[in-house]
Image 1 (cartoon, rainbow, N blue to C red):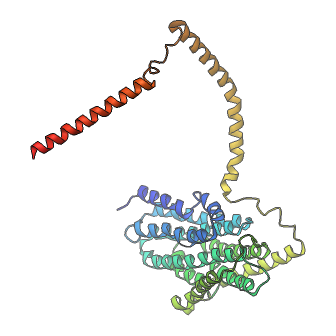
Image 2: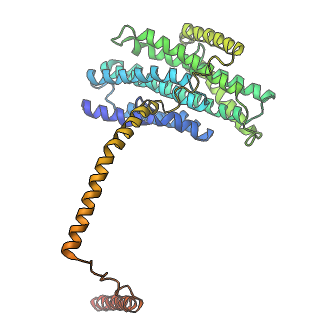
Image 3: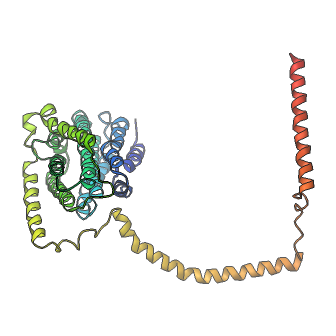
Length: 387
């Protein structure tokens, strides 16, 4: 049976991989810097290693850990809500998708915490998280690949319009819009979320769904306005075909794995989010500069921005304190050198200099080689005589 300390180490160790706040600083910057195929693998598959590890090693359904479960659920809720507003401020599409992954993994960690509080919720929760992992891997991988196709392709073509339509479908699925794979996974999570000891949780989750819809609208806005990378633009027929198969799987998902009762899930938050996104888009079209001061206000690696003022203050304090310490150090060093020269005089010459001359070094090398060969010959003779 795992105790609370072991559970904490499991959560923290795998939380780095999942981008759990405050261990998330690497994730948006890594997604933005990596090549698009690598970002697709990171966001679509590798981040699920943490989720699979939690499902494997946490004592889900076997023992109740209410204290540890509460802490884990709170960390998941913080990650879920914290990443969404910062993602809205990003100007890089892949960094935005990184913050989306942080939020989604926060939702998964919230469910894990609730299952640790109430072990009887584990069967339903494990099924929900398994389908969530499949849904998120397909949708997030498809979004990253679609971003690559959009950024590295031509704009004024029917293929570019098709890429935008495919990205819109994937974005709606990630926002858990009705009749999508995200709606099915949210429906399966309801029994676990309904058992939470916090009556305000449904409202918080509705706000998160609305913010996720705005985040996906922001992603599409970035991609519509972004200029293509002319240096890498090239025909991508096979890549587009493979990407189309991913979209097809995402479209089939809710009808193959979900019940009809799950299809209209999340209708109201997504609808409100779409209306707000349309109003913001109209305002931005009428006045393109009114949102510019907010974009990039908090760059990827957000907490590092908050640390910078404290770091600058620490450097200034260190500089003020270091000057007298440096003066004392120099005085002590001069005193030690003077004391050494007084008692010991001029240091002796290098005793190894004679050994490093070519005649002596060569003679020593030949002598050592002769000793080694002699030892090998004696050893061989002894081995033959023993046989």
